[in-house]
Length: 452
Image (cartoon, rainbow, N blue to C red):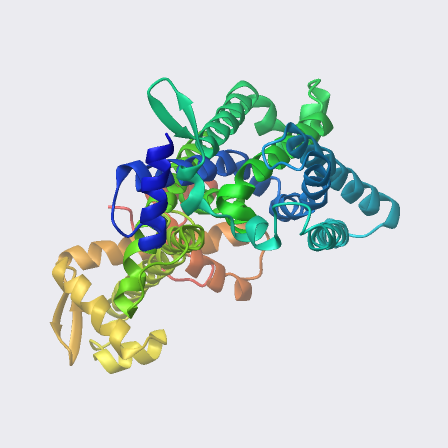
């Protein structure tokens, strides 16, 4: 074990962040980073759903005085007192936050800000004052030292396993068991605490157990990845998964996958990206946070339901579909009134459409065989005429329905019918016809086309 540690130490001193790939070194870094990310992400899902992401941040920072006092007492970074002190302060953070919010009548964000900044500042003061007595400094807590974790090993049979890997594996297993065994309770208390209470599930108990586990997870990750990365892993994978699905079970699975991907990509980026700019490497913890942020941006942009680019694309497609409907309906009404076939410019002016959108709509209609003629005289094909007949029938049935059933004035029905006509299928048109007794004319006296 000693020879292996010396060999690894030589790699660290000669090649910062282990540029020379070795599974005995880099492999354990990937394992430790992944375990820290997964342990945090499992709990982070429920912090995000409860709109308590800031509370995870608060506990992560506020446990610092508990850790510092435990170090002063035990003079060791591996003492069980470290966990005990962190858990006590973590629970006190949640209690103080709830107390200030209730007694002071302030919102939850303000109460969390008061508690965690005060406790974090107290912890930093203790660390600075005790720097000579305890082997700990603020940078260790904030940024961690994941690159050095493979050096501190424990012999298990013929294997030398890093102590951090064993600790984080235990915490990850604990968090996974908690989420698996209390999945129903966590889901109910996250979405509807009042309903959970009526069903005999204590929402407060689940809240404080969650806070205890958040505290334990934060402390377990301090030495290896630091509090900054823990904050990112509590929030970012869960928030990215939330953008990709609306099912809680799937969300948890996706968050775990994203957490592992962030750890792996972060370490690889720490070794490769700096070389593009003439440097050897950078800290793995920081690059894991960067990788997680990149995955979140990808999910936020391309999420199937909530992605920004996907929503934008859907709006554009819907707008184009509505414009195609408007073109066909306008031309159909023109044929009814025996008006001359309009030009592209005239149609764009009447429908308040831009030139590029009008051209694109015409391409779609011509490709679908619904529009004929040249740009100087647009006309409908038989397929386009059938589509126009359905749209105009929907519009005029809606106008009749709004007058008969909703009691609207004839001057107030056109705009609403204009919106509804684009989303009216055959079954709804038949229902409208039955509700209005199958009228032949709309309220303005225009004939309602037959369905066939």
